[in-house]
Figure 1 (cartoon, one colour):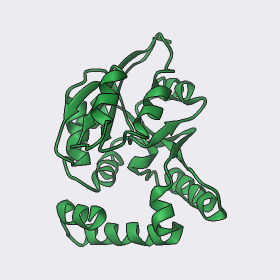
Figure 2 (cartoon, one colour; figure 1 turned 135 degrees about the horizontal axis):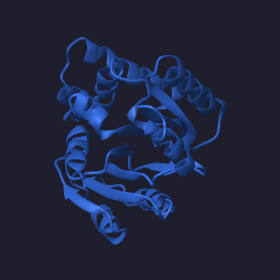
Figure 3 (tube, helix red, strand yellow; figure 1 turned 180 degrees about the vertical axis):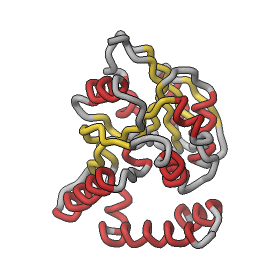
Figure 4 (spheres, helix red, strand yellow; figure 1 turned 30 degrees about the vertical axis):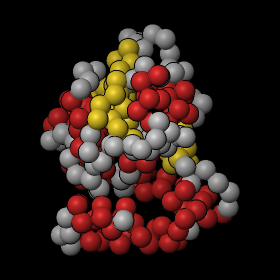
Length: 228
């Protein structure tokens, strides 16, 4: 199989403690891969930008809007495959083999299985619920990462340049065009959201945001509620 040409786009904002770990994971990609690594910094006030440069990533400056950051990063790359990752994610053993298998399949979009750092039954039940949602409803969210062909993204109208809900809107646009499949490999994310609000509190908060989105509240207003 031909070595994949893959563009990895990471929107980041003040992630100097987590971003180095993800960049180290990506440094373990097979040497034969043609890898474009782009970090789009949304106005960090720490060493995020310097860390990205030291890792050899292309660095792009942006206003703090995840959809806009992703769109800028995608536009700056040329590889036929795209991997979109949040800056607090950690790739797990077997990730590169999972990506190679996916990129050899007929056109589809792919997401990792969510794995949340931390202990407790609530987090494990959350992971199982997300896995079922991804499997049965083909509805992964952005913290699961997204692998897809650039051509498929273009057919879906590109990355929505909004500060929140960009992942949900993109998946909704992709669903009529292609299957959205599980990679069968975990992606570990920081547990800070669930630590701050609890598993049920975070689920309720996210559901309230999605309900407000469906009722017509703008992404900018939702972002103000979410980030404060």
